[in-house]
Length: 93
Image (cartoon, rainbow, N blue to C red; front, top):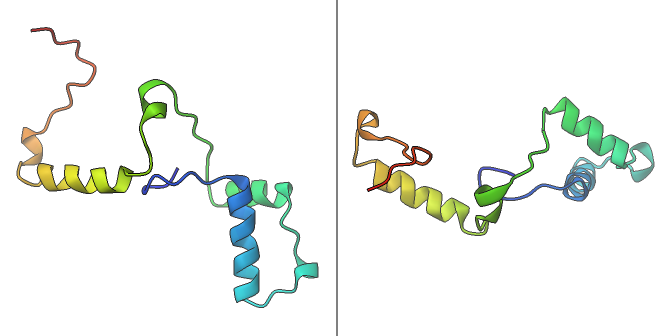
């Protein structure tokens, strides 16, 4: 998952590889965009698989970047010393 909330699959990595090969005029027969190639590419670039569970997995990713901008705008009114995360404190009132 990227910062913009886009999920990147192996097929997307391979398709982007094809696109870059075309841009740089690399002949199709000189490189194979296989599953092994995608695995090596991810290892080389330190891309890791992240599995989301529970509340995190249910969040809609389509508008993540928009919501992130709203949050940043809202938080810009406060100093970092004034921002707390009480998500898992089990506060009851």
